[in-house]
Length: 55
Image (cartoon, rainbow, N blue to C red):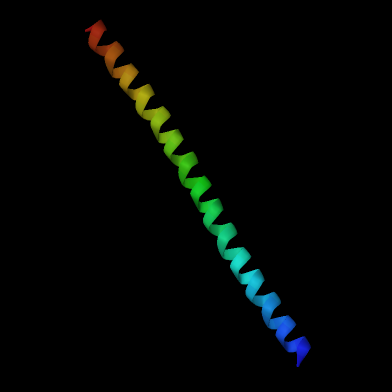
């Protein structure tokens, strides 16, 4: 009976660790995407500003 509880606890801990790891990785991916979009926005804004001065 003790082995069954140990196995159950191990499976539970692995599940929790996997869930937390996925949440952390998703958060990092979203932050990376936001930084990339922010850079592209600034770049597009600068291009539009430059074109406005040329015309």
